[in-house]
Image (cartoon, rainbow over all chains, first blue to last red; front, side, top):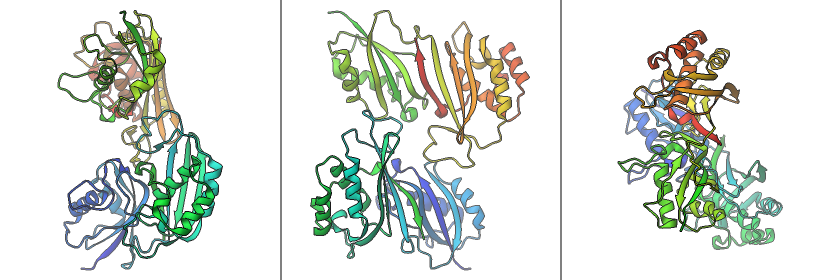
Length: 249
Length: 249
């Protein structure tokens, strides 16, 4: 019997998850509930290995996360979506399943990922948005945020925007888009790159918020990018405003 | 020192509450967290009595619930909103506080209440709407639902639409509006009345859903309204699609 490689596109509400990646201590993770559902459907345990495009942190959401897994199961590919959804909790939903070539790897093959960060601007938090937007009623200068965003766009060494102590050696990434716009009562930040360092999206947002509050100038952001020192950039923005929207291959 | 009567308008996400009303067993209720916050602010315990316009069930939400309480506290009325919000969990928010005359009673003085019920119609549930809409991908005949809705509007004995075993004697209520409309991917039902019997809004929605599925005709709904027998009407629709939107005095 031969292996098949199945690519899944999924959405999840990150509120009640300790991130995507399975954890030793048995905390509730997206990978954990997915692998449990796959085990129920296939009976396979040793062979199943689920790989996600982006290992989102606790409370980060996904509208279009992608993962792949290998299986010997003969379940037809057009049955996987319903079969998985009926074995998953209501805060995860499989949107699409495709059979792909055996060398497809959800993370290494990704060419571009898009994240959105939602910032709620009313004077009072909306109880229904509390887990999906950062409540930020303080003054924000959008123009300056946009100017700083323009500086970060392009191929750069993003060492200043990744968690210190990360083991990754190469910090060069191509930030293809960084847009700050108003959408109703929200400021929305679109971040798009060929790859993301650990906490890079949230560190960029945290830095742009400091610029919006005029605690950092766009010129200072350019300096920080050049010097590469994490402690000069802004804090990591909270996870619950972040959505992994799309992964392109 | 004299009592003051404070009227609060509030929103809450009902997902993690066992309803509005405080319960003997110590389950988490909106009244419970509110009275705890009030106790922290006033130090009063015996005198505080919180009364809500509608005692919403577990998982029912509110955009404009109204409640009132009596206090000897001298906290100025324009300070109550912020003072309470900083002592409340993030799933309850006070929107407005007003001092009202001592004879104001949030429930008895209410002239009209408006509920919305949200029904999600896509073939797959949206993970972000799972606690705020009823997922209902089945065929629904909106025209027939609207016809049945028209029959229920007006002053009627709504005994067929209240939970059996309720102790209320008078089942006559004036249903001033019952509208079924499409809003994007949802069907939304607006229910407005001078008062609601226990579970009346959800029983009306459950009955309209049967009409939408053509399991009940509008003529049958007229019969059910006349005969007053609960078991002839539709089931109680699930709580999480229901929002208490507005209370008018």
